[in-house]
Amino acid sequence: MDSARSWLQKLQKDKARPGASPLGAGMAGDDEDEPVLSSATKQKVEAAKQCIENHYKAQMRSLQERKERRWMLEKKLADADVSEEEQNNILKDLEKKETEYMRLRRHKMGVDDFELLTIIGRGAFGEVRLCREKATSNVYAMKKLKKSEMLRRGQVEHVRAERNLLAEVDSAYIVKLYCSFQDDEFLYLVMEYLPGGDMMTLLMRKDTLTEDESSFYVAETILAIESIHKHNYIHRDIKPDNLLLDRTGHLKLSDFGLCKPLDSSSFPNLTELDNAAGNITNTSADGDKPLSSTAVPRRTQQEQLLHWQKNRRMLAYSTVGTPDYIAPEVLLKKGYGMECDWLVLSFLTYATRD
Image (cartoon, rainbow, N blue to C red; front, side, top):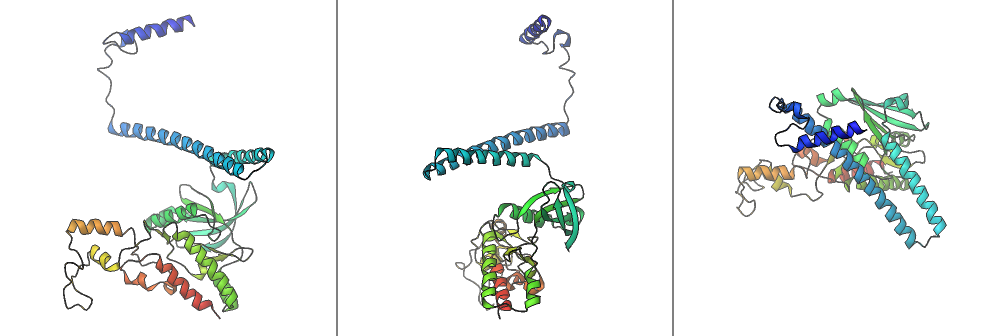
């Protein structure tokens, strides 16, 4: 111990001397020969530093959120005039749930945690398979997407939007996402399994629905569409095949592979968007007289580009969907918003009524 203390004191004295090497007197000239770090090494150092900072920021944020949840619960219990013993029991139950939640967060899910059963659906670049979690024996629907096909078809953004929507939207009328993970070849989405089939099967069996049945399912579809619109997503593929039924007969909306996030639910008028997108003709609707400068303000090319870049996030332009269930505004290529989902629902309402 004494030798270690004396060595430390000597090191501190060497550091204090001007021009001395921090590693001792025998290393005096080593600073000049120190190699210069390459740009790649510096980038790796910065990436590691950022990763560590993000990790501890997330830990602190999680701790703060945990404290806020406990504070809010204590405030509600105080306002509800609950006995002290019952308050303690509820707070202990909260702590138990918080601990379980943290344990689940630390556990990395993988395909080995599930027993794969039968295939219940196939898509363009993936499949949906029934699976059973080994730890709990709960049954789920696992959507398995091939990464190479997603990249080849340019569907990465659609898949990301689908996963984000399922993670963000908490509604009784939306298929629930339990977890998502990936390996080198596939992306996996583990979702709620709905054994009641879909609306298309129901319509094929019954042909048309009674007024009460139609009103019930249309009302639940409205609640499902409204829940995703509140989060500024449009579905763009509303059809009977994507309206699933649970074991009690209630409806849930599924298949968000064509959904699109929008930055705002307030849309500029379509004439202005056409001009912003470069379709500037400066003619009136009948094509005879030029529009006045007050009707459509003239913009420079840079202003037109900035205006279009802003508004293109507020409307969708892609012609996507199932041919039998596409709203007319999707085919016009003038930009469309959330109204396309409501129009398709009106088609379905008319088709299912007796």
